[in-house]
Length: 395
Image (cartoon, rainbow, N blue to C red; front, side):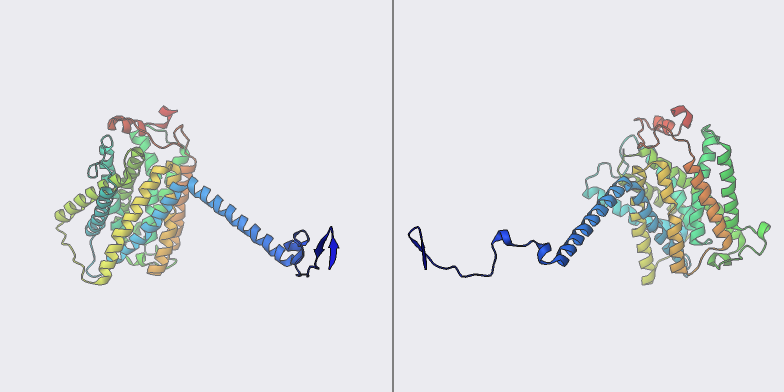
């Protein structure tokens, strides 16, 4: 024991723990640990950046993604409808429309009452005529696709709906005095040729129209295929009216208002159709039937909600491009469910229609309102007049 300044000091036993200033950092103690920690931080940073970028992309393209999701639901729903039309006894087109829309109507009304959305049955003032047009057009379009599924493959019936941009351009030139350029006319002829390849009329192809990849639609009589194509094209006109009405309504009505109008008018029109054609309803007796009917109603409801929300958030051109994604889902579902692929002629016809439609959309002259949501005046007449006016009058 030693003495310092009069105080006795005892020797301090070593604890083996150095002072803090002597503690080596993690890298000095374990270089491998430091290296791994640095890599983990770098990976975490990359993940965070990727998530941030993905979130920003999703926010910028919300409408586009909603429409793409809706097309996936539509493809599955239409596959279920095609199956029901092949069972014995088959469920008729009108009955499929009624069943799907009853489920849609009930779901919409329940949601609107829970969410306390005003005017749940007829919609807000100022857009009721547009809602009526949306319902009529949607009903015609739904009948077209359901009827054509009886005689066409899922992919063929789907791609015929892509004829809408060409029909819209022609209708605008005839009824609205819009310019109809040579490139649009050429795209229209190419699309029409694509329709011919899908329909494969006997007068042009004889008995050789089905050469290629086997498809269940090739077993259908040529006259039935032609009839299905004609009805499908009529449905395209109805769908064009429906999409235009949704764009014209914009955000002035809740998506549920458009859904209620669509389902109400569809139920009425399909019921009148069943009475006029003296069609007897088919009562499902098997669990498979009930499952498919429920799938049609639920998937149709979800698809229509997503589509309406997407179209209200997107410009017309981008929305149309997203709708074309349906052919991808239709081909995948057709392969999985029906174990078939489209014929070579149908593939060529599909490419001709899709590329022609894309060409019309991408080369369309932009207006000042191209990237803005549609905003219309209070009067429905003025609204339609402004929204459907020739592009040149708005420049």
